[in-house]
Length: 230
Image (cartoon, rainbow, N blue to C red; front, side, top):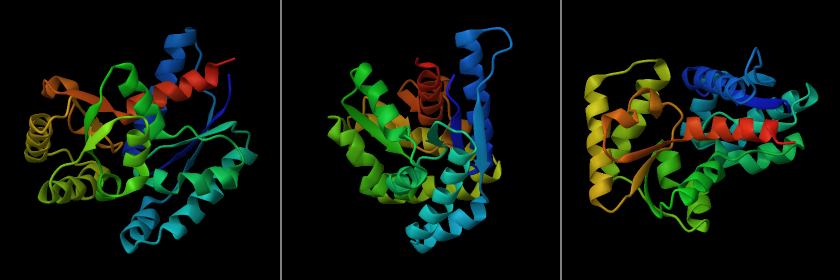
């Protein structure tokens, strides 16, 4: 089993989901007392969030590059960044560490292609929904990406940072998210990506008839496949 290097803490609410999923998938594959071999570097998310909203992406890349080098030196054989947004600086992180990176958008795109989805809605932070670093990787795979309207993007972003990243789950926010999912489907989305690792804490497949793709679940499952691929 390869050792996974997990860059977490962005936020720790979703990182604990990653840890649980990685171990659950290893247990399902190998049985018995098997669990995932991983090295976790958990950052202080307040530092990252401040730099994000200042537009100081070089600063975030520096913090996460140092974290990546630390897990590589500790024995990690490939990297998993436990957040969608910080894949904006994935190339810098991978270059700094010298070990392969399992990109969350590529992992999601593979599952969408497998399932024949060619038009997909995208929920996430404003950075993920509005900038090219995430959407382009899906579009290069032949998948058309539909994002919510501007007021909806603002609300989605606010709920992520002010509620979900702080462990707050509110029914009003859940209903608003589900209305946006339905609106994306009306605009032609065959499915919707939960493109922030906290969104799965708020809405699940049982809440809507629209197919949901939870990137946290997809990313963790493919990380275990990579770890166990001999």
